[in-house]
Length: 236
Image (cartoon, rainbow, N blue to C red; front, top):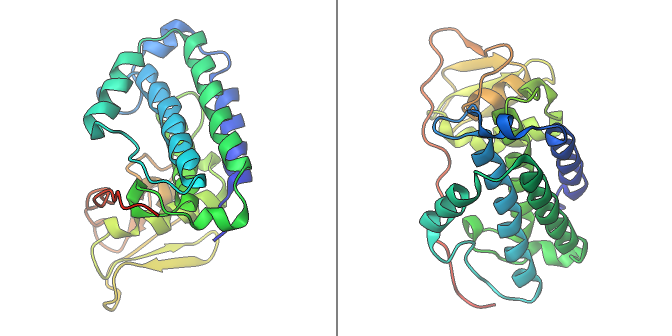
């Protein structure tokens, strides 16, 4: 599958626009994520780009490496250590790491997108889709004017595909505005949740939809975010 590189680059440019006028005070203020300031979200977005570039660089050489040698503890430590940067420092780091990631992707030929990576035990193309989700979902978390209604339709539909496993088996979601529907599991559908494609994606992502989706009865309780499978370290 050809990954949406151009769409992710467009998301990067939108993210840069959103944070262009950010002040130091705004960086220190709370984000929509419990326990995280805007600085935490920006630190995560910058380091996420660095991590994906690391995976890409090694994948293009036919190598497999883990995203973080120290696992989630290392990831969290990096975020905590860099969340307190000034607004200018956050902008500089975000620009540098997104540029590095885009440069790595620019060197990938069509055959390279199927190269394996340790991230979700998937391939290089999957990291492009993941970055697409990270950029747009966390732009909402920054609470700087971007809302789920601003998400590209294709991103919202992809997010539903990715997050469908959070629904109980037999649940169906129907996007009224685009005429698409998705079913969770192979059993006959029971509960049907309807709404706009962006609102359904926001709900599944644990964010606040502009117009909440509805069901005949109560909305189903969502399961956890799709887990990361064990990282593989076999060589190509």
